[in-house]
Length: 162
Image 1: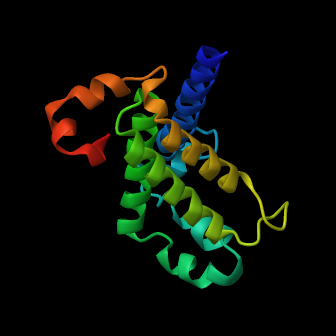
Image 2 (image 1 turned 30 degrees about the vertical axis):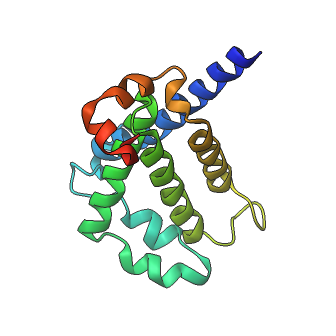
């Protein structure tokens, strides 16, 4: 049973990583799933403008709307999607990836307070809880390169990179 749980946790980590990496790819190239080709980042459209300007609500609305379309915000968001997604898929730098992912989802949650379909909980909270579970479990070792990653001299000398 314990081995089956390890595989489930590994798959959960990989699929959550894919969710983030796919969002990155769709926004960069406009693969027409949520981002049309003519509204891609490569096409000159800000990947944060639509959501932050028109999708934000609640007590922090003005803060998030002020960040909408800012180049620094675009780059931080897109690099976060890319690196957190890749790290989760590969099982490397799992601590950083889970903490970074939780922070990203927390900011997305704050941007839409209160959630549209529930007064408290939406998918962002669920993702945060999953990421915290993966952090605690060091799930990069399950179906990932986590054990090999931790043997690298750079990681041995800098345990925060685990």
